[in-house]
Image (cartoon, rainbow, N blue to C red; front, side, top):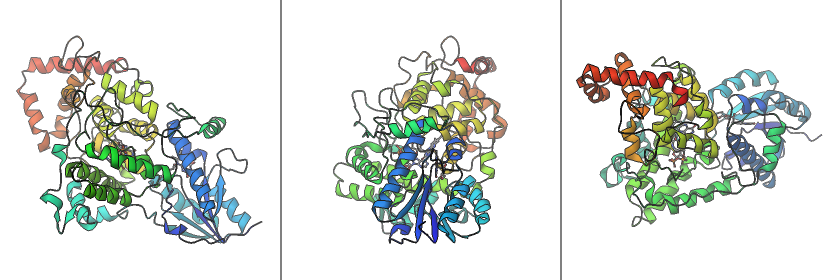
Amino acid sequence: MSSCKEIRLILGDQLNHQHSWFKSNDTSILYVLMEVKPESEYVTHHIQKIAGIFSAMRNFAFELEENGHKVAYFKINDTNNRQSFAANLKSLIDEHGADKLSYQLPDEYRLDELFKVEFPKLGVEIQAFNTEHFFTERQELKEQFEGKKTFLMESFYRKMRKKHDVLMDGEQPISGKWNYDKQNRNKLPKAHIPTTPKLFENDVTEIVNEIDAAGINYIGEIKPKAFIWPISRAQSESLLQYFLEEMLPYFGQFQDAMSNEYWSIYHSRLSFSINLKMLSPHEVVKQAENHWKRNTDTINLAQVEGFIRQILGWREYMRGIYWAKMPEYATLNFFNADKKLPQFFWTGDTKMNCLKKAINQSLKHGYAHHIQRLMVTGSFCTMAGINPDEVDQWYLGIYVDAFDWVEITNTRGMSQFADGGIVGTKPYVSSASYINKMGDHCKGCHYSYSKKTGEGACPLNSMYWHFLARNHDKLKTNHRMNMMYNVWFKMDTAKQKEILDQADQYLEDIENL
Ligand code: FAD
Ligand code: DLZ
């Protein structure tokens, strides 16, 4: 039996080669990673998410060993795998006579609490370490907005730009402007063909077979011999380089565009790598800024600012909200929405073309870009009054990048407005005119985007007004909603009734839309 004084736990989303833990080699330290069933089953995950995480964990463990570290790895079907973090750790502590357990702070509240309760029972010294991943500390956002009613992302973002000296000219933003959001709202021009996304062809057959053998329930499709997501730091780095060279010149401009044909347009598809910590947000932001500085003739500031805002701004802001507001945040339901998520979210079988595309590509790739998540599936659920618990379960399961801290703040907060306006200043809901403005989904759709009522009217149109009308009491003091309520109250009552009746009809028959 080899003895190790200290056991260090690494979670499936803590694959950070740059962590100070790995700066030197120490044979009295045993690193441990484990595939355990409860983590695969707290929600029904997409098969690509489970296979991607297990593959990346196995690669990480292999690379640590190659670098001279001692590693224990529990595969999902190993006979000695007790399928729990604490039970597996206990057996390692006993086997090695270790007297200390270290772990990196989990990003998820559930695990953070679990570890605080279970680890002290193991009878060894416990030490928690920072993940050394984020720009901010867990409580930083809370402290910044102490005593304030709202947490404004824009003021947080500007502070971050200054603090980390990103796109700055002294104390001022480069070129004098902080935000180019308004320039980032174009649809794809007619003949425009976006750059092909970089897809890997990883063979994950063995892992998928093991997941099946373990009897883990999952959703979605996978091509096990050509798995498209990056499963190592090297692949993640090459995806980042590809993005900088091929996609960044158009990123901001087409950030909000939607398309029948192109499923990721100019989006980076880096969220899986960043959330697993195979890439650090610092290096992604710095490399984007430096790449822009070297290529100002081909990349304008709006493109790079749009990208950096997502990572230095939104991503850190969402994490800050999570730690400021959990665990209550996971229970918020501002509109008291209580409907069930329609079955077509699991099959893609709907006549609404925008939803069909977004759901089918999510099942196919475990991915949809931000506007699909926010303005297609998200907006539909908000307007239909779906219970946010069900909406959260769907988003947390289906996307390869979905982890509670960033899923729940985006879904329950930004998308469903179930937090009553902590993350967003107004609900993100849209009628068909927005969908039609930003892409080509409405062309060839079973429904007509220009009709509010009657045969073939797009359900989104009447649902939009139904949502506003039934939630007037909750939204009437929100100044950002004034314009839309003015339009609604100027409509004659017969027209209003026709629209509400149409929406009622659609909502009653929601499974068949
Ligand atoms: P890009 O468009 O290329 O953006 C670059 C990077 O910016 C992303 O990789 C991501 O790290 C970061 N980013 C962009 N927007 C956000 C945001 N709103 N919050 C946090 N980070 C952001 N993101 C997740 O990582 N996990 C989730 O579970 C998740 N769930 C979401 C659910 C809903 C309802 C909505 C509206 C958004 C959600 N997002 C989530 C945010 C965003 O949609 C994804 O980060 C993005 O689509 C990932 O694709 P990408 O890497 O191509 O992003
Ligand atoms: C999502 C996930 C899955 C499916 N499996 C594992 C696992 O077997 N072992 C592990 O350490 N982590 C896994 N994860 C990630 C965790 O469930 C959890 O979401 C993150 O660690 C929270 O930040």
